[in-house]
Amino acid sequence: MTDNQHGPECLHAPWRMEYIAGAGKPTDGCIFCEKPKEDRDRENGIVHRGERTFIILNAYPYNNGHLMVVPYLHTRELSELDPATQQEMLAMATLAIEALRKVVCPDGFNLGVNLGRVAGAGIAEHLHFHVVPRWDGDTNFMLVVSNTRVLPESLETTWEKLSSAVRDILAGAPVREEDCDLNQWPE
Image 1 (cartoon, rainbow, N blue to C red):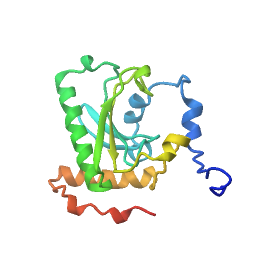
Image 2 (cartoon, helix red, strand yellow):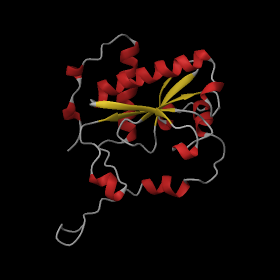
Image 3 (tube, rainbow, N blue to C red):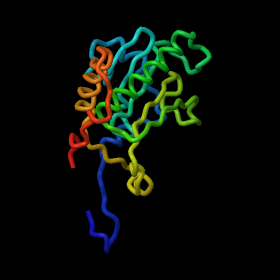
């Protein structure tokens, strides 16, 4: 690190190199097809499984709690999903939003899908929705200047909290803004 008189401060995020180095390289199989076949939801970041879709943590998140809703059917097109799968994707996105409200207390959300690599899809061959929690002021100079985000919590800890929240919500527990504890985040 340097002081501000002699140049910018540096924040190192070496874990991002794994993503950068692998970008655009062919992989063996589709992670969205392979991970649900395994009985390792915690290690694979699968927060919840539905009949036709599942919710999974993004391994390279835009923000803490960045989730994806993925159909089990391997397709790149929304039009290839039957109506029941389309409906479950929206229901799972809603469940993801409610769990994030309970756990990470965001001020808002981005909900989106990138169809095709040129549209920003990192895994273009398997359609998925992104559910990204957002906070006032979360886009700052770090991203703009250094393409680096600061995530205050490990994926494993986030998985624990979100999995528990999903179970609570499905059991009928209300999601109330006053229950969200912003003091849970490390400084």
